[in-house]
Length: 109
Image (cartoon, rainbow, N blue to C red; front, side, top):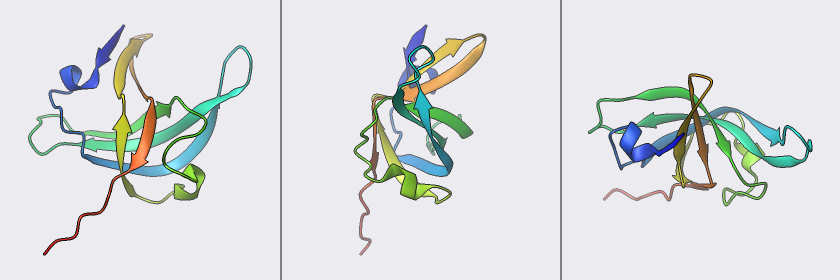
């Protein structure tokens, strides 16, 4: 069962996401072919009552828009997730997205 993240997490603003920790290649269970990346994120929205930390998420592409994704290992980076979905498998929440992009920096002034 998959839900759009905005319904489950009570928010449509996923602009305050942080990529952190280890980044691993993921592999298809049956074919063992590289099929994406497993990353950790922190999901925060000041207007939402829910704060999710240390969420493992699968990026379902082998060529994400965040170029050189493995170079961000153990660095905290602001990111945006494209097509974020939340599902339930074996009584656990699972998170995946179609792509990941680096959030553009905005200059204050």
